[in-house]
Length: 213
Image (cartoon, rainbow, N blue to C red; front, side, top):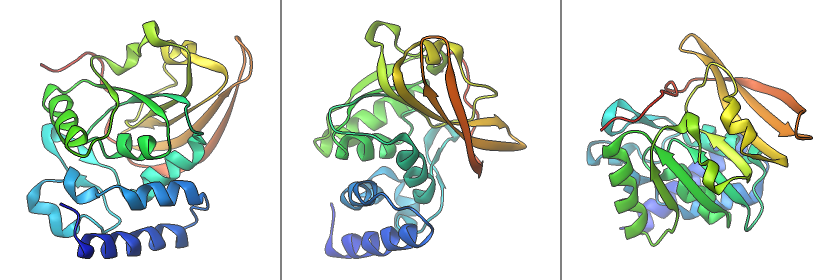
């Protein structure tokens, strides 16, 4: 499943991400342990370790590795933190969070992806808690979360998710529409106040409401 060739290509990919400015070695090491090719359609398997996004099922994409590293670095995950991921997708980002020692709760609105990610992550012996539902609603029954990561572009910070973020917690999301999105890092300072910073432009699929049977 994970050959010497895959490991060699992955090492080169991680070095290229480091060269682009990712400094958190724990993030880089976590990504070096995740076999990205397993999360991709077999037609793209030879491109698994290029620093590009690729199509997956249900009209979605597996994010560019640099983008995964960038979001994860901004999230500043520590071991045993409770992390809510909005948009399981292929499960690749979920695996990176798990490699960092997080307790991951992940929501996916596309049933095909919800089922597929559970199969792949299960086969790799990763253990997350999976939920089929609307990411905008979050998981109030399991709140608060130390970290919240949104892997699709929201037009604004979803209020219900902000309410589920612990005081002192961090949320990272791309904010904007299909014409342009900024990477946003939000720190919840108090129950009522938060600090927002912007971290460059990216391109994500939109965060959609509801769930797709």
